[in-house]
Image 1 (cartoon, rainbow, N blue to C red):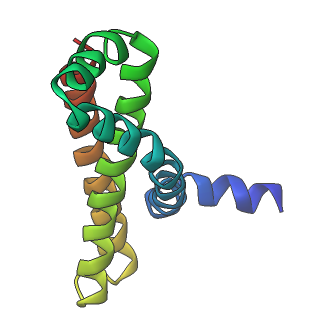
Image 2: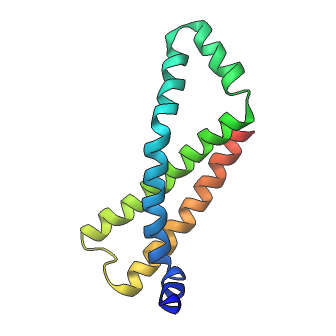
Length: 120
């Protein structure tokens, strides 16, 4: 059993599937936080200044926003991969592995770009 699990975790399809579910949970859990930040920033000019200077002045908040963005980026890219598979593209084993690998690579690049944009 342990050997079967180890083989499956090396599969890009399995990794993409697990991360797709995890990213959905992360996005779902962080939506209220981001909605509060949005609401506060749109409430008044003072609220906007508070969010800009105090909330986003905190490195931990920027990290949470990056985690949300990373989850959203991966969930979107993996979702497009799933939609294409539903339309009949990359349904076979080998093409599915290639599609999963491409989605993982695109996600890593976009998530790194988001990290640089949000944190610096």
